[in-house]
Image (cartoon, rainbow, N blue to C red):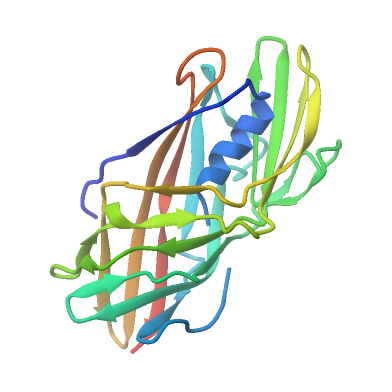
Length: 243
């Protein structure tokens, strides 16, 4: 795969957030369910869950975001991706439904109370005497773009926007204990990301078209000081349709 440049996004907060909330919100800014064909000329690609996965990493005010358990910071993705392929142009018209699969049972429960439930992601971070846990659930993402040039099967992903629809049930539950005590759940609908500099590909393999979109975003949050919290999202989406 060709080299890529991480897209860095500054996301200052109006007021400090508990660490558990930061883990979820940053992850939720980003990512990523199944439906049918949409606009005229568009094609339905099926997301290959065996090849599509996104991992969360980073730090909260210098404290690393850690996994709650094996694989809790990596989720596979399924669903459908809608793309309009026409000659040497590729466009994502919207109405894609790409969803994260549960990676295990993670804390807290969906309302922020103690205990664990199935979730896409589960993270934890500690800062001095405060420890937070967060779990992301029902992540669903749409993919849109204007026309993108296809050159020898490659395209620039800078013009692609990935977004969590406003009406999606995507949510993040958090629970923080220590110097700060807070818990609850927040909706993630309406968040989006764009502008990464990376090369995607559309190739013919046997009787199938294989669409690959790399994922490489970095998000900055400001808590105690400017840009003191960073989360990176890395991975890829691979979607296939029969010719």
